[in-house]
Image: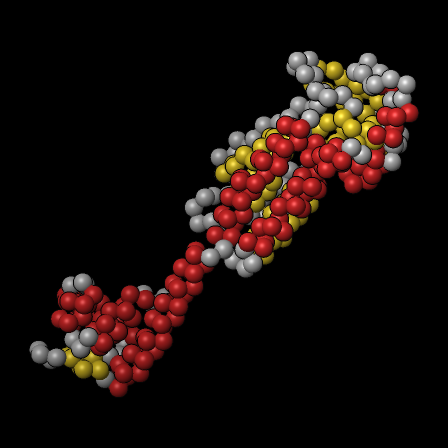
Length: 306
């Protein structure tokens, strides 16, 4: 493959009318320019310049070659300008994954606002509930929720906040109970589960003083669809253990109530992972920064309200 520097050196010699003038304009020593042009001619097996002790002039082939050099160098400049423009303004596609439980009432609310701010950015959002693999799944960003953050040295991690599950029931169901629910009577209430396997479910809860309790249940409904669980809970079918941010709008309106205030699951850390800070496309970097700014506030609103 030809070295584009040789094209540049030859173009400079012709443009500035000689080796000495080209050396002054480019800062490249005259001897270097002469050697590189001579090697270019040797590789091409043609004479591009007729030289004398005082001047040099293009041969007919050299003139045609010079015109092509102009085209090549203009293309290089255009490519550099395109790269610079891509660094200046976020644009292009960002491929991101997120667990379904974090999409609802969180990412689904934040993403449209982000895309309004950056109209040239396209986003492909994949709902992946397993541990997404950036390479195999073709992702720029993966949103995860775990008890601890990844320690993979090949990944960059940005924490976004923490999430927890809370016990909720409908105001209608609460009105039918003879007394306010307590920790001791939880096992006697009808329950709805996020598990898909039709078997017993176990809820591990942490109390207001850090005490822990386990509850083995026989739920009426087993379903991983959080929208269906929320609707079934609002209809009064039972108590659900759901992500706090998903319940918050209905807790605020009073359609849902917190069954045991102060009791919840151990918080899980919500974070974003990506391959490297260096060389990130502006669109990817901008979306990460946006999530870092917006997600913690959304997640903390629920915790502060319950």
